[in-house]
Image 1 (spheres, rainbow, N blue to C red):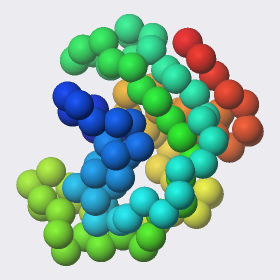
Image 2: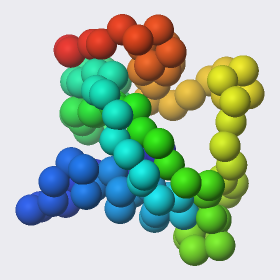
Image 3: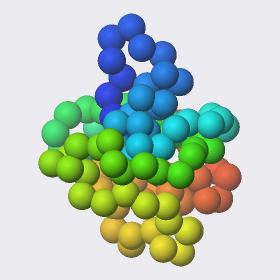
Image 4: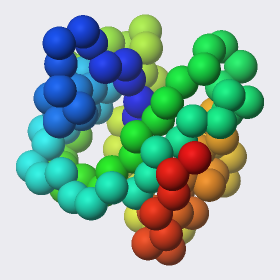
Length: 104
């Protein structure tokens, strides 16, 4: 899941909004920072800065999401995560699993 911070929006409110928009889940608690990822080669579309945090969320409710944007929503156990993730997110997942914090 990802999204763009809107003008005048805090990071916490962006996380909550994007969760609802893309999964139908509600943010219950924001946990510790995993990392800040800013390598310009990470996303070929633009130079993005990605902030990754641990979070506790409710069960997803895909009934309210845009089916043109999102094909499927569900929770994954650690070993069920897809092996290939987009936009260089493999190292983000690895950092989150290991407890390593990164700042690039």
